[in-house]
Image 1 (cartoon, rainbow, N blue to C red):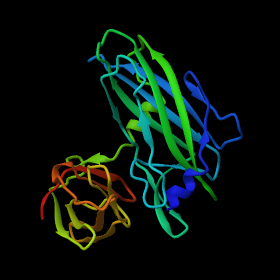
Image 2: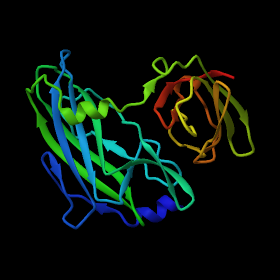
Image 3: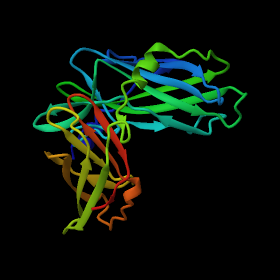
Image 4: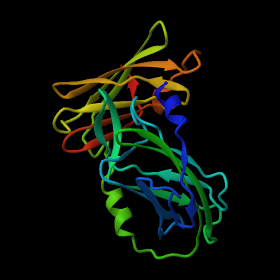
Length: 268
């Protein structure tokens, strides 16, 4: 319901190559950073969003109070695949609901794999995001940029964002990640357990099902000894059955000191 109401307020941000700005006085600007070429022929680029004070935008899993970002690469040329690297997000309280995202500035690194490595990539990206302060408004930015030969020297802003990524399970010392699933009247209940040293402070776990059309409730998280334990409800948005692949489930633990990105879990 919240997102349906917000959609009425949709505002387009008109773009120029490499730089996107709204024709109106909006609290966000967007820029494409061309980045550098890697030894394997792939290119590291990034989208940089700069927000006015008091405004924020959202992570890939934004929470019940957030608006998920959506990327459309369909107009691109010589583009085989894109890998998105999200820096560690922050947790916000929004009218008693939790949202997950970023304030001030967000640099989203993109690793672009061309179909033909020695040819330029024509990157045409339409990016729908949500921004919030006292109100939440969807925005659209678009880019049309030809990325040709470039330097092999990393761009400082992109390199800094890559350094802010969550630790992998191995880097964080995770020794086990399990998911116990049981049916409910409306869908499924999942209990995820991650065995790892503390990430610091009051840890929060986010559970992503790895499949579209599944709504996941805000996880109730607590630590018991060496385990971080989180429980969520899962419901198919169309009311149908849920086919859950544990290997596709993604668990993120956000702590005061660092975050942990865990890919897949075993039966609990």
